[in-house]
Image (tube, rainbow, N blue to C red; front, side, top):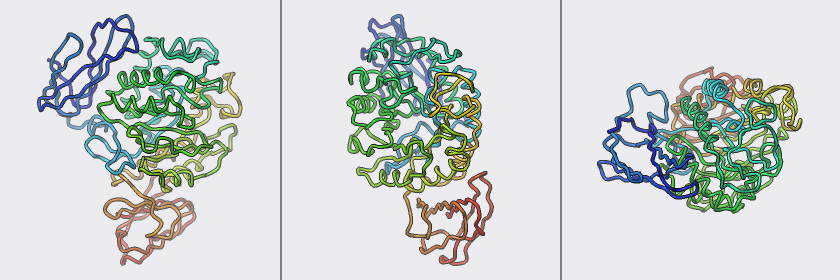
Length: 495
């Protein structure tokens, strides 16, 4: 009998005479009769493994190949700080607009973008990166699971200029039939570091858009059935830990690979972790809106340094209801030191959130998303990188601090299924939530006129640039304004 605790992944292995692509399963039966099935994954040399995280304590009997056994799963230890172990993995909220943990605890996505981390970063670098992002308040990161450009060239070395590791030997030919177990074993280590820091990998299988260097992505070329098989592999290998599946990346959403991958994830993920699409800027982001497998739609507003919150508002109006976010605002210092720099990022995050992007906020920085090894590494277009910056310098850009604070400013509030609200107050950017909750963002602060008795009298006012509470109080009557002298960004919270 093996002993584990809820939501902690355990791994079993077996020798199976099958190669990558075969369907191999393990079954886990709880003492209550609840049965969960997990796909197994090929790990080289005839070895297959399965990973399982029990969602409830008690005795779980498992069967895998010709082997069987029992897991004695304990309740979460007192004082567990990692929310994914104390509250469970993310799933969509009852209203379908936002994230909640498995136990119903509301959550707000606060994501960074490090697309190239899986195939460029080292374990020690990811430890440094994850500690920084955790300290700033991030809880997720967007990742390309493999280097997607078919014509990219460079040494197979994560520490060499223009180098990268390779996930599939045949990706250069537009196929996903020859995975390298060594690559994914190293990726295991990187994602474990992220999980230790409470950072969820947002796993994009193979990009459909620009990719790493714009050198012909494989995501629109590989056969849909191979793409779906790889999606199953990602769920098998990484789905017993916190994850989000981004089956469409920077495309139209109508590529056949997207629907095939989404349906496969939905069919094999027993935990119901969120699955969705990330779009290119000039596309109406509504593909597969009514698909059973689709949980969220993330637009992209390009990299011209413009605030385009109406793009998120458009997504909010689509039906059936899905989670919404701006998955790619302008990257900080994208091609220039003044582009989308500093507080631009904070204003962008709060504006998108209040326009209807209530699944959460996403940040990115030039030179970080490419995981540029150092400030003078060659081989990158000056249009996309931040001048004079590698990933370490980009990690310290000012704007990341402001976006990371969004979740902390709203921590502890009932943020599940927030709705844009412009009827109870005079303010262009506001949200309503359970219990009459009102959240208002104003770029320059100032008094907020209130016109609805449902707005709670108690309030606090926060400076979103540092998270400090600048005022608290209770209005005398429902018609009294929320007081502020103006002149600086403010977030007003009434509950």
